Length: 69
Image 1 (cartoon, rainbow, N blue to C red):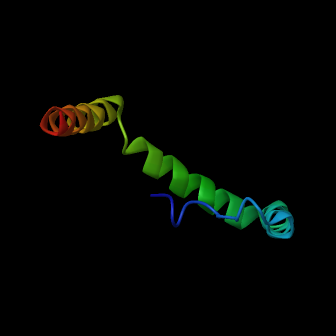
Image 2 (image 1 turned 90 degrees about the vertical axis):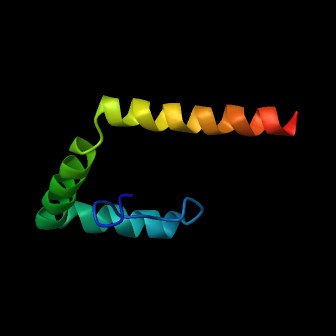
Image 3 (image 1 turned 60 degrees about the vertical axis):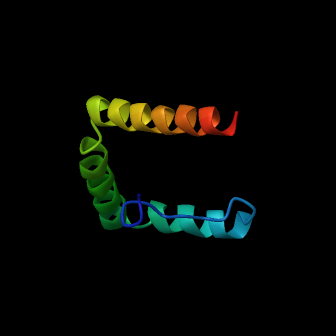
């Protein structure tokens, strides 16, 4: 979902987190590029789209639960 708009770090890797934060702190262009990409990506997810997605998910879950019962 956020592949080119974020930097991912293993949460169990404190050295990796330190390196990622130091890299971001020292690279204004990278921070700006990631922020722009993330903002554009987030703008494509409207509340209507999210609500529709949840509605489809709940329909699927309730149908599956009814079949299993």
